Amino acid sequence: MVNWYFSSFNLIVIAIHLAWMSDENTKKRKSDLIHTKSDSALSLYEDQDAKRRKTGELVEVDASKNQIQLSGPKRTSSLQAPIMLLQGHKSEIYTVKFSPTGRELASGSFDKTILLYNVFGDCENYGELRGHNNAVLELVWSHDNKQIYSASADKSVMIWDAEYTRRLKRYKEHDSIVNCVSTSINDLIASGSDDRTVKVYDHRAKEIVCEIASKHPVLSTCFSQQGDRLFAAGTEGVIRQYDLRKVDGQDHALSSSHQLQFQGHADVITGIALSPDGTQLLSNSMDDTCRLWDARPFTRNAQQRNIGILQGAKHSVDKNMLRCSWSPSGQLVSGGSSDSPACHVYIWEARTNRLLYKLPGHKGTVNEVQFHPKEPIVVSAGSDKCLYLGEIDSNNY
Image (tube, rainbow, N blue to C red; front, side, top):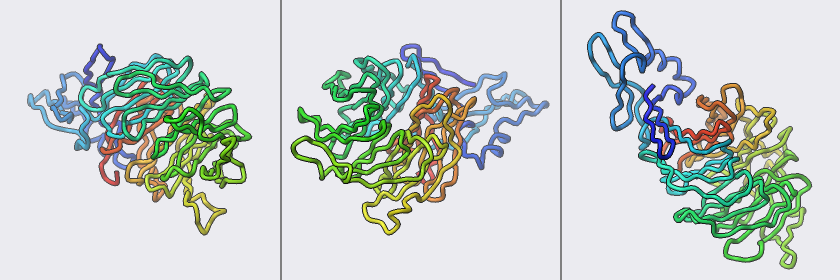
């Protein structure tokens, strides 16, 4: 193994690509790369010093012939190495998001902080956001790349200046833990809480836009493409869609009659995400399935919106809020997992529901996985205090 240590920001670059191969090619490629001959002492990262080219490809060292040969899968991204391990948080990492430009990422942790990293080069930790008094449970970037919105167990939602790393605004509308935060194309902000409400804010206004009452704690929210509908899910195990155009003008309340239900999960729903084209919804549940739903407003099979079940990822007794996400093309989906003792990143093909990747590395629950907006790169956040950046095959990305 080859490690480069950057003590100034606790970055380890791990140049191993074996762990990030698709299941169908893993056995073949492993035998090609790790095969050792007694007569030639050919090995990969064993007794000899291995080297890496600037492009990040791996090499084999043949001690008998004093030769260095290029090896490993073809590079598919602009990352400095095929896999980058980012460390800096002092406790579990619950959330991670790429910025809209893809040049930065932000992560939130039980240590009450948000850390900002450059995605390329040395992945420098260039900023830290402090202000929450409890765990940061979810965050999201504004669409203009200038702000970050965060939800915390301290019952607040905060708006941050991503460039100057300072707090701009703090909302204290909830009476309990705020589990989730999401944003619309017009930068409305929605937060869901254990107080059984969803609050919708406009950061340009002093008052909330609307309040949605629920009978159960809300763990995840997301907006429709146009920002006129809001999806919310939680401990009830049902996804509900609300029409924000039906908000009462006086008390900002939204009637429960203005909703559509997505039923099928048998347990708590911990994460939901809308597809890039706005037609499908992805959910992650404690029933150990991720599901795909037809999210179109008008569909012939209104009572049969569940169009796919993705299996493999597991939840565990820690009951973390495991999220889910889509690739930019909408062809790939991913979900967090807690299939201990070795926790994995799961990536499926949305069209076929086929598992494409089961990526090891984390030693604790994988709480969130996100796709890069422009390149075939995924980032995962774990309870092991680690962030992994890794490239995948560019096909279908």
